Structure formats: structure tokens, C-alpha cells
Image (cartoon, rainbow, N blue to C red; front, side, top):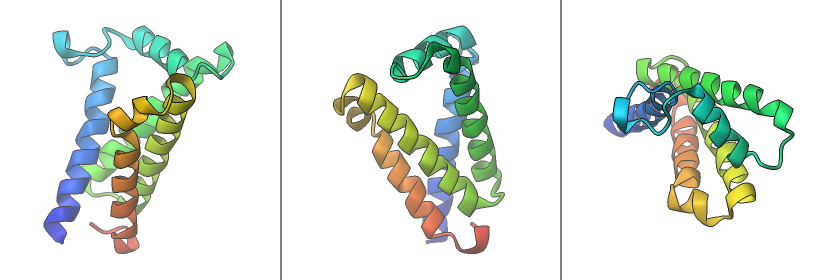
Length: 130
């Protein structure tokens, strides 16, 4: 069971941190976005139902949440709360995708599955320990 916890922690953490690295172009030619402005444009598409003035805050909020959850999960700090945060972050992202693009998009990218996996990790981690 301990190995499964570690696997879930590392998988969720590296997915978050890879996404954050991509929005700053750190993956080079493999980056989804060349810079943060490209990520803000994507955020505007995902959150098409939100006022344009909220997009920068949403983009930065997602970046901070993903970085915090990713680092905490990777180093094993307050794992239970980090996993709850990861689950909530992914659930909100998946729901925004479903509203803006239709339900197929978050299903194809397994965003709800990731959210469920993070929730299971949170519930299976007693007292914040891995």
C-alpha cells in the first residue's frame, strides 16, 4: 500500500509541475505554451463563461495551486491536504472544461479521473502522512 501511495503522489505531483513548467516554456519545443501569456489565452478559453477581467487571476491562481500541491505531494508535506487540494483543483478545471468545451474534453483528458485519484489518495492518507 505504501508503494501505491508513493506512486500516486509522484504521478499527481509531476503532472502538476510539468504543466506549470510548460506554461513558462521550460519544456522548450515540447511546451504546450511558449510563455505565460499563451497560458492566459488558454485559461480564457477554458473559462469562457467568466468575465475577461478575472482571467489573469484565474491563470495565476491555477499556477499557484498546481505548484503548491505538486511540491507538497512530491516532498511528502501535508500529503492529505495537498491531495484534497489537487482533487479540488482538477475537479474545478474539469468542470470548467465541460462547461466551455463540452463533457467530452475533460473525459478524453482524464481530468475527472485525476481528481478522483487525488481524492482517493487524500482519503487513504491518515493524518497527513504518506
